[in-house]
Image (cartoon, rainbow, N blue to C red; front, top):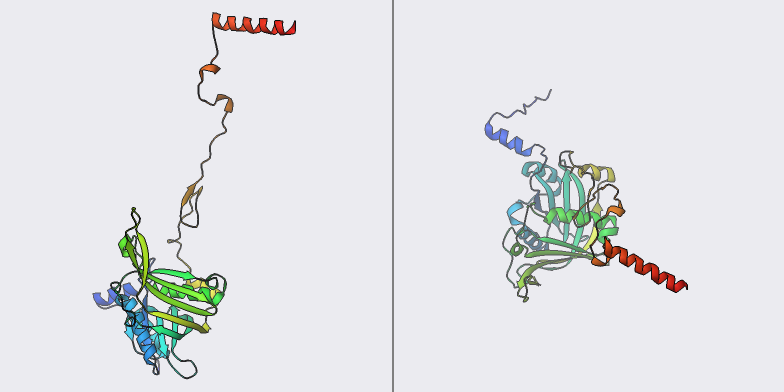
Length: 300
């Protein structure tokens, strides 16, 4: 029996808007994430998923499904990130962070929870919902080891939030700090407090607000270098055009190079001094006669 072909052309304006929203764009939509709860979980994993959902609540759809349906639901919810929680005897309190490319799994990294303090365990005032966090990564492993490099990139995608053109100083109040040390990853969440310092620049203090995790790195499923490079490929229209004689340093400071014609230093205008002026007329002749008589006396 032949399969009936389905016409993909939209029949209504609503369907057309839906397909246009899903179509490839030069500037893609904000990345959504699925938070998934497995069939067997513990109270620690369940509460951890709720706390991570609370950190990015406005943008994260929560779905309770099994892992083999993640690619199906990624298409349904237009999500390119996922977090899966599970618990069993062999790998207790397990969290899997992952991302997809073209609705297929690109990277998956498995982290085990060794120590956990929830949002409710830490009694302090929290940041408002939807606050864009500042991400800090400490540890040489994030710069030199391949698995930790991918984990850093994955966590950045997961927690970065929407791209904004500018942020006011008072809005920089949420800090997510990740530390890689001795095979473990420590995640801490802080609220920055602006204190009076006696000058224009305020003094900054950090107050822990939770949640806090002590992770251990378990299994990884990483994309090949070629596929990873393809996933990060940008369209030519988004690539900045190189401008001649203009460069930028690591911190984004712009430098320009100027090319000038060769200068004649003999015609260079210098500072005028009275002692260096050329004398003219009788005064100059008298000075020259005096210098000549002085030289004649010295010779005699």
